[in-house]
Image 1 (cartoon, rainbow, N blue to C red):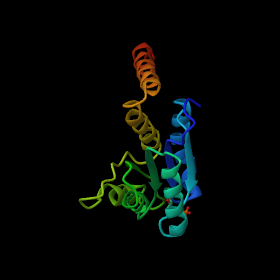
Image 2: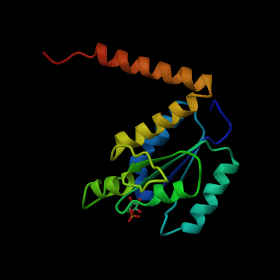
Image 3: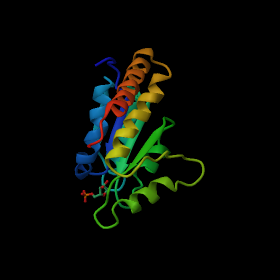
Image 4: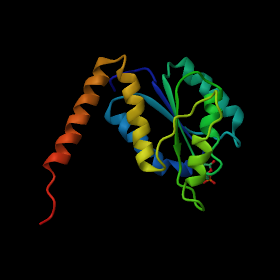
Length: 164
Ligand code: RP5
């Protein structure tokens, strides 16, 4: 790990969100960004959530990524309790395929913003990439890794061959 400080807190409403949110963890690991991931719920474990947020701030967290499905209020509740940036990832829900999660998260009333990513795995990975971009503003090592990642991605697209 490049940094010993826990820079990003990743929270999801349920362990059932982990399959998708492992994409966030994967990207943060790739960039050597220290993170802590927890399943904590705004409605099932509100006191534990509050305690964990305070502990993460003490550990030096610079951002939170919050994932939830259905009436996805978790990211808003997290944002209400911290001044740190909170990115929301809507989970693909069973009955409405994540449209409920997306609209719940993205429609935060004025005053407490929750920048919201795409539903599912793309959003989970992009939340981590966005957190990396924020950290890169004040960390040259992370900035260099992000530049290298973007270069690799560009090369991969340009060198890909379409089938005959
Ligand atoms: C939300 O309810 C969670 O974020 C999860 O996406 C959804 C379903 O949770 P489980 O019933 O699988 O625990 O709070």
